[in-house]
Length: 194
Image (cartoon, rainbow, N blue to C red; front, side):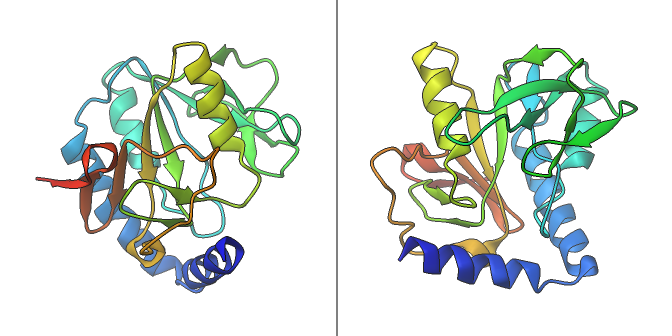
């Protein structure tokens, strides 16, 4: 069931044109900046967009101008939480073990206060489907165990909204959901924010 939902939503997103992705991303970023003109904490973790994911880099650049730092996740090995390394706009990137652009090994490791987490599929309760490896669920669990769980903001397009993501026991819900259509506080009953 989860695999079918993931595949259907991922195929729908990958079928978008570059122009459609740019348009939806711009609407999403406007909603993100309206809801969070300045994100909580001092460091925001985000993901380099792949496979037609929403591109939140314009929000990151706006926050950098306010003195916020940014970090990208680095996948080290299957079954382990992600680590985050400081990202700066000029710094070179290299593929991590999953082939996703990440800071080089000499970039400092940091703990984000806020995480922008991509959504392939998601439901109103804040549960998401990623690519199936569980990296973000493990990461949120590990950070919570250290009492440093970041604010988890799910970022995705409405075409990934489903009635039920059928969460497993280990799945971690998002605190907020942001799409091109609006902003919802997921862990507080999914109220739409203005």
